[in-house]
Amino acid sequence: MDIQLKRGLLDVCVLAAIKNEDSYGYQIIKDMKPYVDISESTLYPILRRLEASEFLTVKSVEHNGRLRKYYHITQAGLGRIADFKEEWQEIMSIYKFVTKEDSDK
Image 1 (cartoon, rainbow, N blue to C red):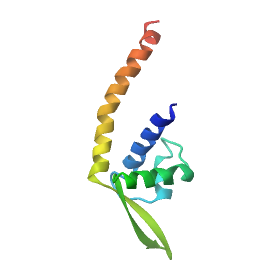
Image 2 (image 1 turned 135 degrees about the vertical axis):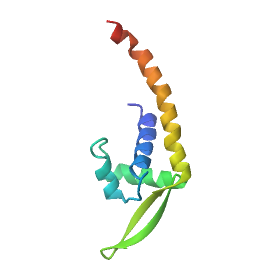
Image 3 (image 1 turned 30 degrees about the horizontal axis):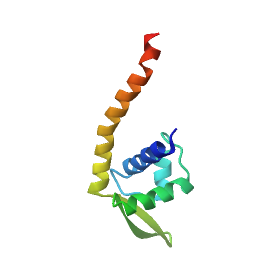
Image 4 (image 1 turned 120 degrees about the vertical axis):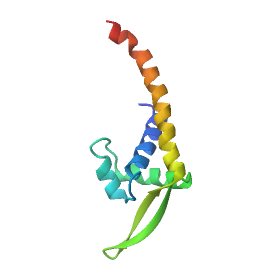
């Protein structure tokens, strides 16, 4: 898969994982696992990029004597998910066109 496409898809997956409630890194990985295999070394750069893009905010909370970062989706992050859903319709149309010959056989 094209690395830029995969990167964009993973960004939206991470946003979707925190759409309904704030979450932290390990929990995000667990929530995504049934759908997407993602490692910590992949997740944390995505989280930093999403924070820099203002798609999410971060707050540190003490948990068992350690600070845990919780991620919260912003309105811009929710907008990115909505944009993705619209873009996906176009991607599916392209996919149908590309695979049209396969279904004609």
